[in-house]
Image (cartoon, rainbow, N blue to C red; front, side, top):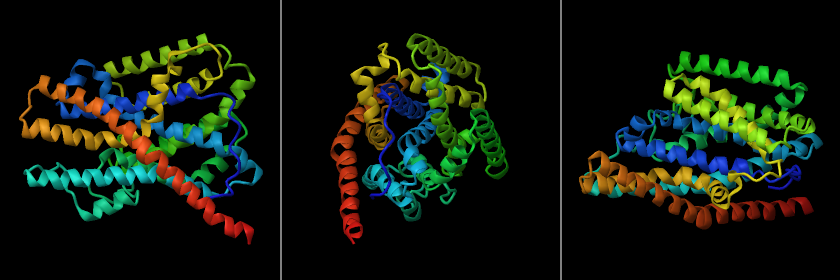
Length: 374
């Protein structure tokens, strides 16, 4: 897995983005707890209905960070796509496979007590999930570790990463890049309705690969715009950026209460990602740099993947075996599930995610050494 080139020098710690990633993952967990609690949370706080759009924030963030890391190697000719894909595989697949197996074990154990999932646990869909082919409309429904459809979409974007880079790099004007991203979003939105009859930002197993394209592309473009804004001194006024972030968060909440279309949220999410990146350049302290939130961001990938099997287990035991079916009981189980998901995510991050990634990357380097020597 050598030959990718050295990462771009990081101008400053991106703690704000890391913390925001943790908050976004937590929103996804609460969104799914709400489903188990029969909508009790959205009844009190309607904006949570749009919590699944945090996935689109992840998609844009992925494009931004990968461009941040590999753009210099791309421009210098040191980028090697095979090495890039090897490192991405080491990053995402081990924990994905582990949580998929955990769901399979829960399904098998539940069957002994007469508990069956709402989806059909077929061998073919399991294999497609394992191969990260769960966002190409190859499966008939959202199954197994259901949030992991986005991992399949991410894998698709990784495969096309050079094309994203080439396209944005060739456009030397941020206005043209913004126009292209807008046109791509509109084209994908139209295609989603024509092909799948589903809103673009609600696609999962049907066509999640289509959903990720505009968000990943705009993340790549934002990394280029980030440089230009830094050169103009936009990253120095932390207080002004904080105002922008507060206004953006308020706009998301208001749009949620008004029940506006998903498309309204997309540009706000994108703008907030850019503001978060700029906020990292200011020395003025911010709550998003707290150790707790940054730690939550560090385990956010694990939290995103482990929370579904945790919820299955807790609600399977408490909701069905113990007959906890009232709203207070379901919300209490939700609180327990949220805390259990945090603990499980930390353990998965420490025991599985990081060691597996290090081992696979090291294995790739050792295999590349003989070829380099030869």
